[in-house]
Length: 264
Image (cartoon, rainbow, N blue to C red):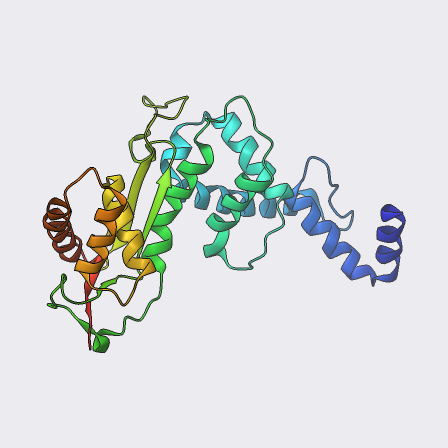
């Protein structure tokens, strides 16, 4: 039934549109989709090579560590599968990395050469590019850069992201590819400072929870948030949490992860 519907649609289209559909289908999957008979193969080869090289090069540059983990043949097989079969939702070239993540997450059939951390590593590598091009306007009028972090509400930068990974993705390279996740997850902060430099910071579970509490309680003071944190870890004295937490808040502000405090 589906095939009949597609044939009917093809018959209903003007001839030039049928040529266009055949043209683009061939560019995406030249091994299985024949080129339009009206176009000589010498010209088709120009388009085949140009489009594939552009997409492949963009992904290789956007995921440099991932590229180093694959030999040429399986790498190009993966990119060709993405290029041929993934239906992109964005027409913009800058969103290819996002579309590639979507492909890895929902469409790729696992292959023997795929590392177990494939998706996590790809998502980690994409974060840098995402923050680099992010266009965010910060409302500095409502932020006191030098505010008291303990007695006012800390403000997190919109240009930061905290992620939890099963694997230590920031350490992965060709000669370090763990096949099983360690007992403890990895918490990584990725952020862009006021000079537009993107940085990465591994944090411990307590700092990760502190950042989550700040994000969830935007009107609470640093003291209130740290008191809540201390209640969640009764094995540590509250004074220790408050003192260490204040030091951490200052360090986060120094890196522009915390922008300051909310103005009143």
